[in-house]
Image (cartoon, rainbow, N blue to C red; front, side, top):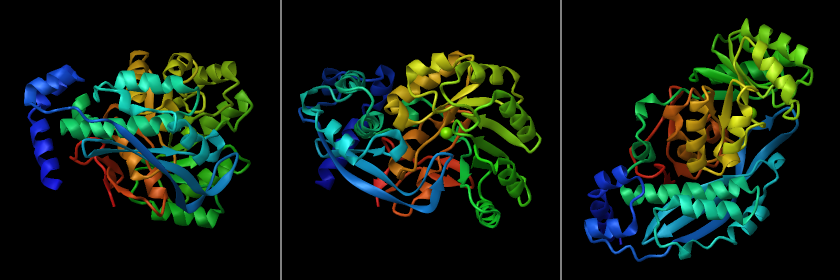
Length: 378
Ligand SMILES: [Mg+2]
C-alpha cells in the first residue's frame, strides 16, 4: 500500500509543471500526461471531536473551556485530504448541524477531482449558512488536490513561503496578576492580541504595558456602542502602541462605523461585519480592512478570492481563526504570505491537537514543505 502510494505520488509529481500552469487540469489532460487512471471515487467521512482549551476563553459576550469541532476526510484512490469545522457556540453551528449538512453531500458523483469551483459551488447551494461545515469540505478537498499534485498550496498559488507574517497571541481577560503572568509567558510572540469591550479596558492595557512593550492589537467584538467614546478610546490606545482595532462597534451601526473609520488614527478591521466575499465590497468605506476566517467564509477558495478583492479595493487584510486544530490553522496559513496581519494562534490555545502542521516559531507563522495543507496526523 505504502509503495503504491509512493509510486502514485512520484508519477503525479511529474505533472506539477503542467498542473500549475493550467491551474486545475482536466481529468483527460492528467490521464494523457502520465497514464494515471483517475477512475476513483471521492469519499467524504467525518467525526465529531471536542477541543480542550488551555485557559478559560472569555470575550465580551461569553466564557468557555471547550470548543466542538468536526474532523473531515476526503479519500481518493488511497490518498486522504484532511479538513475541519470549528464550532464556537456563539456562531450557531454544532456537531449535529454539521453532521446533518455533511450527510447531504455526495462527492462520488464528481469525475474531475480538481474541479473545486464546481464542487464547492454545489455544496454552497445545499443550504444557506453552515459556513464551518462547508469549510471542512473545502479544506479536505484542497488538501487532497495538493497531495495529488504533490505540491503545498502556497506553491500552487505562487506565494513566497518566507513572507508569512508574525501571528498575534491572545491574552484573555483576567485579573491583573493572571494577565501579567500570561504576558510574561507569551514573550516569544511579537504581537499580543487583547479582547476589549468591557468596563476594564484601560486597566487591561495598562496591566500589559506594566510588564511589556510588545505591540498590541485589540478586538472589541462590537463592544463599544457610542462612536465618540470609541474615537476617544482609539486615540488613547494609539498612544500605548496599539496597531489596529478590530470590530469596535456593533455590525448594525454601519454609519457610525464609517464615521469612526474616517477619523480613526488607527486602522479599523471588520470581523463580525465581514463574513463572505460579498461582504468585502460592503466593508469598503466602512472599515480600513477585513478579518478573513476560513470558518466564516466557507474555506480556502473563497478566502483567496476575498484577499484579491480587498487588495483591489485598497483595503488591509488580516487572517484570523477560531480555536481549532493544526488542520484548519495550516489550511489558513498557506494564504498568510498575502496578508498584513495574522491571528493564527488557535492551535496554541488547545491541549489536544491531533495534527502536526504549520507551526509558530519565534512568533512567526512557519509553513512545512509537505503537499496539500501540509499536515500529518499525530
Ligand atoms: Mg474578532
